[in-house]
Length: 129
Image 1: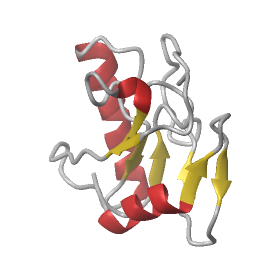
Image 2: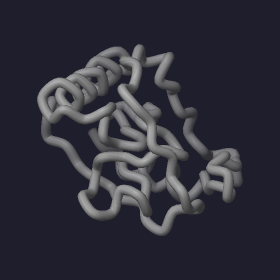
Image 3: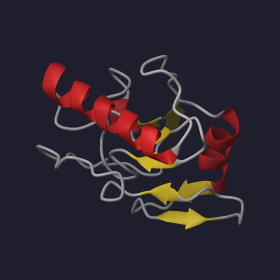
Image 4: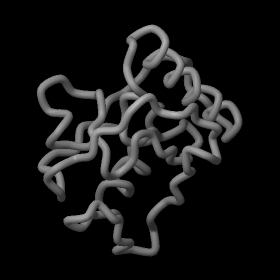
């Protein structure tokens, strides 16, 4: 699930303060669909990022499931990622900070201020998409 334009907008248009609160720096920023809006499961536990702003933004590309083209199918794909990460991998939540659907919707994963499970050895210093 990746749209290069929306990926660039997400990380260029939004920056974080020392408290992890996003500041909108451009009108072009995409809306981020909250966890509640895509019916995320409750997280098992939370570890907050200690140092913000983070040093890195990691961008991952997925070939599974196949590209989604509607908000509903992309929300279902995000839920399937969360199920895989929690039920199969045994993680506390979905691994990514944010996800971007094939139709351009940005989905909140762990969000701005929580340690992800996306890049072993670098989760505490970066956000993963």
